[in-house]
Length: 174
Image 1: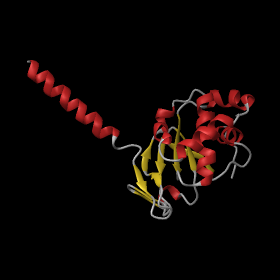
Image 2: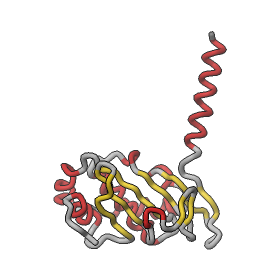
Image 3: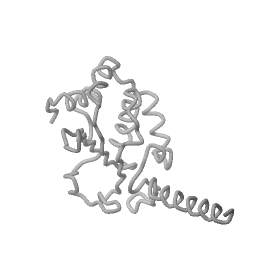
């Protein structure tokens, strides 16, 4: 019986290790010869590569409008976000930390985010340019009940939180 528990424990350990390896992979970018995030990511992955240093600064100094945050909160039911970004991309380096801070102020569970980091050639595992009509990055797609209701592409029209409020209120931003 003890051996059975030991085998079960070892099996679960390797299963969890394999699951963890699916996220936050890094590669050396052939264009810049620098380490970049590649494939599925989570917020923990943002601490990797030089993106992590930029992330900390942008996150720290961005101050979302708290009056807009209060208006967004009740609109977040059944909302999911899909982010396509490049850790090498200036707009991603600026906007993604700000978006994460906005979500944190909204008490949105960032573990629910679907984040994909692509390379300079707009490629990643099972992703190529044109998938989900991604032409520029970062692209933040907002879904309600599984249906796309809006996007923030590259940079917000006004601010992240104002654009998000417009999307969630079904007012077109682009």
